[in-house]
Image (cartoon, rainbow, N blue to C red; front, top):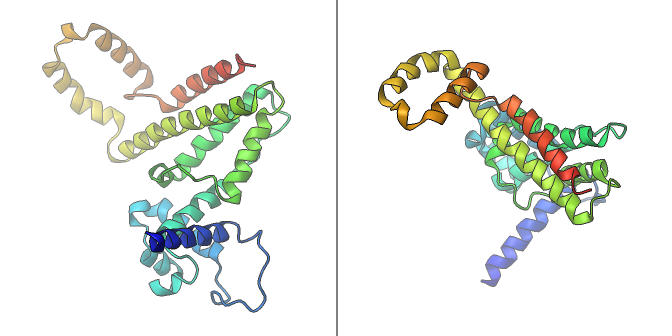
Length: 250
């Protein structure tokens, strides 16, 4: 389908132009959006809306309303909702704090995972965006450059450096997903209230003799965490083990 291929190529080119808009030379006299509002403003409004209402509520019409515009006017700035989300993801990454070069290497590696986890918790809608093919814009590329710089020269091969960043990213993402779920559940019902309702019911229906280890360890963990799980503690424990494992290859 040549027409479809040409359309896809044109859309990809437009998204790349928008991502790298601040790095491209301006064209004098080119037609474009009206002065007073920029693509940056549209992206910021999209992030605000997604942070507040979730990505399911993110539409071109909703972002336009956030800016006091008609929906059709917004297409002058971004060609589609998908393109807007790509720009939003990159803008969030661009705000990532640098990793101090004077930190010990273990702390720098923990900071890589910690920064990603904090970003996902601050912007939970990112968890609903596919991470595939996202390293395209200046924000994510610059962050990847910083992450690599944090572990460059410690003795890992180029491929091992890429693997290390990927493993730390995957661990941070999984833990952030649990932390976001815990925060959402707590907003509706506290863990103490949930257990007050669920505990007696579970004791009545679950035969304790069939699950001696789950019962013993689950009880000990629940009493210690005062919750079904401990995302923060699990992150600290897990990322330390991951870093030690990565450094074992050095």
